[in-house]
Length: 121
Image: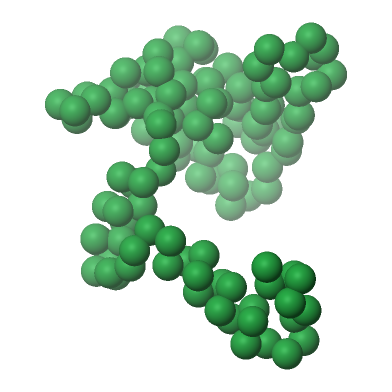
């Protein structure tokens, strides 16, 4: 997701073309058509990239890197989702650690007698 450029997405029909960077064959690319909810989210991402992040060229990233001065560098991809997740959790006033979601899922799987131990691992 972080490696998608503006040239890799489209709204008519809504789709994402996942490139295989460095691949020898074009057939290694994956083309995904999107449903209504994901098309809405993609439209919002594109609008954010153009208006807020100043991504104007097809080679610019859909989710560009955020600099320390809170500006965006459209020629470099974002590194991770950690800062965005922390902001979202702060807005929702939820206090969790970074790996709590993973541990919670494993704990629930282990407490369910239907789930085999191998699947929970």
